[in-house]
Image (cartoon, rainbow, N blue to C red; front, top):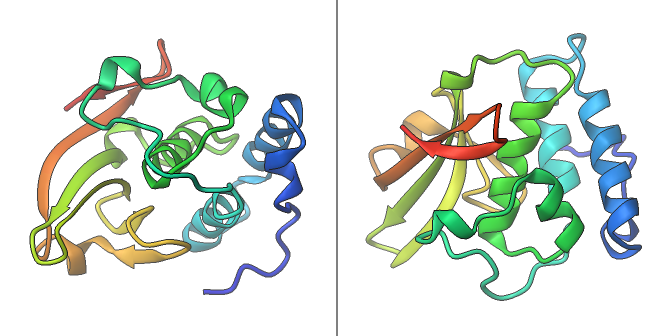
Amino acid sequence: MSFANIAWSHTDFIQGSEHRLSAWKSLRKELTQDLDHQDWIKKIIGFWSLAPLQSRVLDYSQTATWPNPWQLLHQGDFDENSVSLGMFYTCALAQDSRWQDQDLELVLLRDPHAHREQLAVCVASTWLIGWEYRTMKSWQTYRNQVILQNRWRCDLETYLPVPV
């Protein structure tokens, strides 16, 4: 997957909260109708792949503690789960809202073979992002390999995930 023409860098994540918020706003403005679905998603993956990862930051079992999009960027603490949450928020709040809210789901997946449990984003029941670093995978391929434990959609009034 090529991420050429990405206008962001790691410094967008380390120069402070105002810089992160501004870069995220620019990203959402760049997600326009002229992009095909895959290029649209690649921009999101490219941006979020620059976030410096820490060990566990977001407790996926405590949804009441999850930050809204602006809190997430302001805090600046990221792990694989908070990056998936950030990608979910980006999809939901992009300038071109090409998918209905039922087409965007934050999912908690468990892979019993790899002993792994993590948040990811399922887009239009077609693509899975956030499950593997810097990749966009076919949801159809993974849905038979993992156990779907929970799923959420974005409530555009509160900007928080709500259970489906």
